[in-house]
Length: 127
Image (cartoon, rainbow, N blue to C red):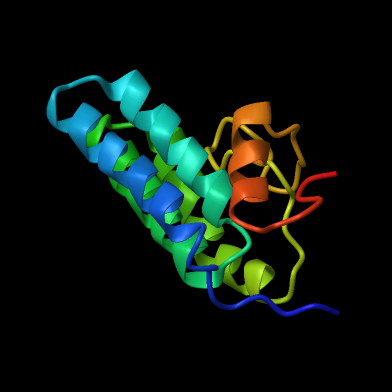
């Protein structure tokens, strides 16, 4: 079993850029775009416990902001177990993290995000 803990330094700028784009869009009221950046941050960070849990925290706060009971209730168990699943290497690769997707369902990763993983030195991610 492979244990994951720290996000590689080369991946961090991409992860934090997605969070920055999330904040910018959220502050302007562009909620759909903001959510899209949270989903991208989730895919980039889901292998790393702290980053994975942090994105679910932001998703929970987003659900509270838009008053979505489904998102709020969907994020609570993800917050409780997402980081643990990352730590032990049992994540559904490509899952975007929202309550609109089953929490254990793997999804295809866009070519753009696969390119980011490759540029970050992470080979064969999601394949």
